[in-house]
Length: 489
Image 1 (cartoon, helix red, strand yellow):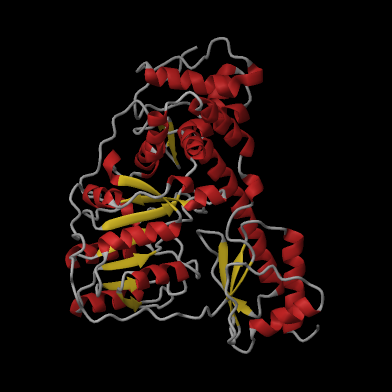
Image 2 (spheres, one colour):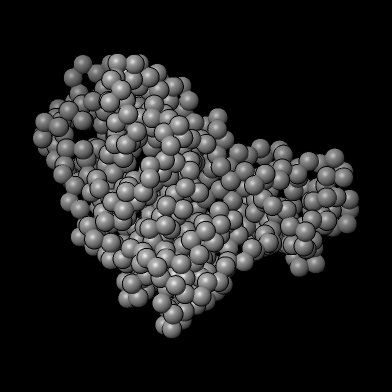
């Protein structure tokens, strides 16, 4: 049987009990043998199922795995085709992204200016719930298999080979491949590094980037680790809050009369408000950076959590001419993946970063790092991210219904398009400290986030997380809080 395609899609010797895997292997084999080329259409899942007399759900599972691993790509309205970024194709790198030379320049030694220390900003909100997914969602069994494999391999290594593993080359190479093929970063292998722990990553990046007295715009004044890192490098800090409606205009105004060295920003999902920078604002910010030779330090820890049709496009993927330094957690899946920080920048900057004294090797677990690299290579991390994103979208929508039903007349909020938290504003007449204490006093435990430093001042803002979510707990808490605010409890 032939169709209007470049190959015969009747797959020989198809075993219906394991046909998803056989369909994957067939399509990969046809692409590798050049019978299928980038851009060639493939049948819809229903068509292929009908041709081979198997279930459409089996074909869909195969297509999802092939898409996660960059063999296929699907665009709404145009069907599924062989990906232009499939593993057999050479990547055509963008020419206006990360560059060999770092255009913003490196630190100037012995520079002296008046220094303004960043002031501590007391958190004007209360954080409740989790802003990370349930650890139970991570495919621990598969991860353990990879760990065991690399643990056995390591037993055979000489000391020299074992120590060479600490350059994390395998993980770096797989990340470069993933960021290029799946996210369009346009990187060479010398444009990425991995640092253990966010604090160390911030300290090292700022050590290279910022001289004492340099002006830095901080858009996350409640981020204590960031504030501490800026204090340590003696930067002059200007705070511009993402909540301000004239946020971009204030940046432009400051740049018009002040030489700004860098701006730190989370475009996808700000902390704590979960605001997302729209595409026009992203373009404007990148253009301002180029016009004023300002470096953008972009952090993106919620890259797995987007609820629209397509993933968020980070500033790293705009034509920034090398002015962006991209920082991110490998994943929010586990404490290990959260502590592995990806740094992407122009090659000159990465070279300087790697010239700093190396981190102590006892802070690293190379077996776990190689296991994570294998999960990225085999598509297991992409599969995990897709599953946890689907679940998180369900949690988000369920929580929206609960908030709207029990607290609607007391709060205002925007349904988040990214991340794992709601930003709630309660009516001015309420003090959440008092309201939540009443819940505790009535035997209803409030799941305060352990990282949130409780404020002693009156507040009517709440960060409400839905990463690990129990609908009964959420509904019961919201119902009781509504009764407290109505004066009925």
